Amino acid sequence: MKIYLDGKLVDQSEAKVSVFDHGFLYGDGAFEGIRSYNNLVFKLKEHLDRLYETAHTMMIDIPLTKQQLSKAVIDTLKANKIKDGYIRLIVTRGVGDLGLDPTKCKGRPSVIIITDKITLYPKELYNKGMEIITVPTMRNNPEALNPMLKSLNYLNNIFAKIEANNSGVSEAIMLDHQGYVAECTGDNIFIFKNKMLSTPSQGRLKGITRDVVLGMAKKIKTPTQECLITRHEVYTAEECFLTGTAAEIIPVVKVDGRIIGTGKPGAFTKKIMKLFHEATNKDGVGY
Ligand code: PXG
Image (tube, rainbow, N blue to C red; front, side):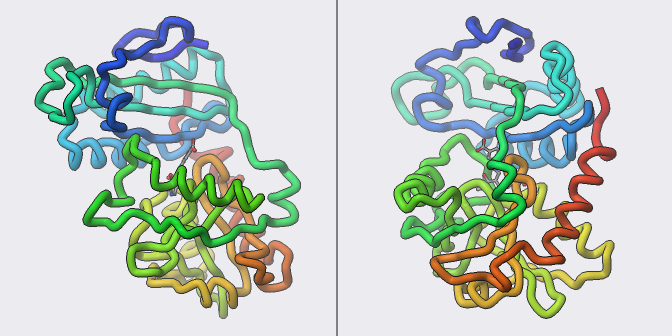
């Protein structure tokens, strides 16, 4: 497997970063998880826009234009002959010293692109729906570390994932700093009730898959809202599902021991899943 590392495609065994890189020392960097389907990179522009926005707030100057980075992604996929894949884009602040101070990172930020085959949740979960729980670890307060940033600092979500693992479930709802439902450790959450599709308005990442789903719902004339959502509203929804680049769209049928709707993936969820798969197979940047 070839890895893109600061302008070069190198063998996996040679793709190494310095132990003084602030991405490694402090999680001081940004990333994106992107997918390609059928030789098409899905929503590449949207992922690049989000990466540059995260970097902008972190005051990391990505040493490539969006166009150059887009080409580097395509070149890496081609070099590895990946048709359906997962793309991990990483930007770190670069090499500094053993102190937090980012001004000590004198060199340029590192840009790394890893492409790989995809691992999914078991197919059965998509057919039957998954069980999730709410965990005690709340999502970061936006004024501490804004969940809108896709930074390399994922410890908040890793704690929640540990709590999910300890309870024997694959995903977990994290509440925001005010106790409202925010999102899951690596996915956004939606509920559907009385023909209305709702998703949290605050305390969560602005997921690309989330935005695709909101757009698809509008297209099929389903009203949508971004609002504050309580756990009670999740428990009493007719349908619930999660969205994310890795998970795609996955139905949720049980939350904190409460059965959601009929306990089976609902008709609206199935419709959105179908539309999503149609879109991923024909939309995207070709290579
Ligand atoms: N919330 C969080 C906290 C995420 O990290 C999403 C929502 C969904 O966003 P997108 O833009 O993907 O629809 C994410 C995405 C991984 C991995 O390797 C994680 C994500 C995406 C891809 C891979 O764990 N998180």
